Length: 112
Image 1 (cartoon, one colour):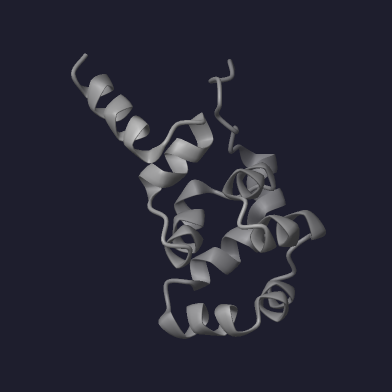
Image 2 (cartoon, one colour):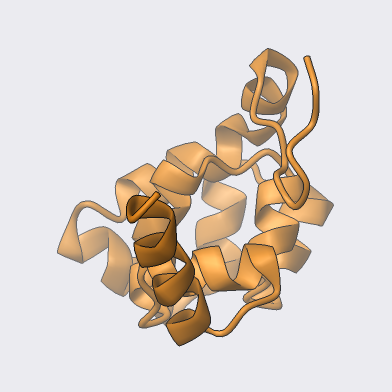
């Protein structure tokens, strides 16, 4: 399988690695969970058993590091929402583009 430049492959081993992080992010579907996280992030991360790498990425608000730590973009979107980011913002982060550049890129790809 060939790598796509700028893409972090989410396969079986990455899903296993990222399970605690993704489970935590899934919990953010509920307002009470988001409030609990925001009131004590460290305790909330511990509750889900995040690794040191995952906790550092969460604490640093580093979405790319979260992807590298096994985060699925679909679950991380829940966390990104807490940060006020949307999927286009994260796409820009992944590609090194601004959000507006990434949106324009997506539109350009649709025109092909």
